[in-house]
Image (tube, helix red, strand yellow):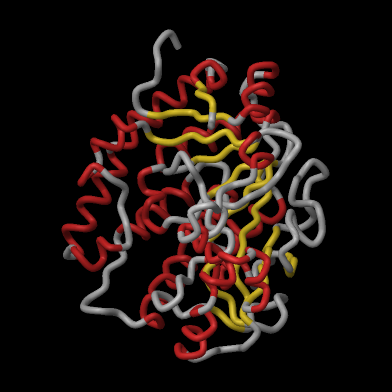
Length: 357
């Protein structure tokens, strides 16, 4: 590539940039690929997801760990479930075309989402993800002690979370623990191999199976009071599982090598609650190995409303209007996908990378 990319940007931390410059952007350069929470914002990243995963499938010699939470978990699952991107395509279609009338209850939204997740994640695809995939799928939930809690109990449990998090992120262990669902043993090189987790937060490790895959996936995306959450997940022990993004909104994983991260923000925050204290940012050690790939401002300006799709669209727009805008966003990703694909195949990711502050 003899020009600066127009549709995407690559922001690399100090150590990631040094590594990519020295070794190139080959798939085996990366220790991990992350998938952020953010609800429908992921629809503005589909071109990046498709370009990266096609490149990784074709060129990777090992099994690359993927880690996601909430809608990021759904992307992780779709990427890992086949070798041709069909699961991802179906997830995009089903996600965009879900319809609700009036103000749906959390149970109604959960039922709708579970139905289409089961249509996408067939037993054959789950077997592939667990046994054959070049990607090692991992995703998180937030586990509350009480099974099938009432809305009032969930509300009271969450009420003090911002304060606890502001004082010390680890104090949130008073309310919940992390559930880490993983597709069998971690690869030797995986930064997630450390037990019980990559940080000090109490973590329950659960092996993914064909029985618990969809319930765990639904739980990871169960935004409180939007979806109902899931209790009694097979093999996961007691507790009620809600959105993994409560703790791991954008993740904070310190590694020894580059971490590939399709994203919609130049400044990822570790957890959803971290948007409140202005001093909470990713650690320097985590940032140093990040390789963020995100749409450029020029690309973002083309999206409807010059921004990413959001959950507010369910409230502000009719089903038909929302669906049309989301379809348009995905269509506008094709140029970005093509440009990033050309960059990756030419081995020039390091050349177009900017320093991540």
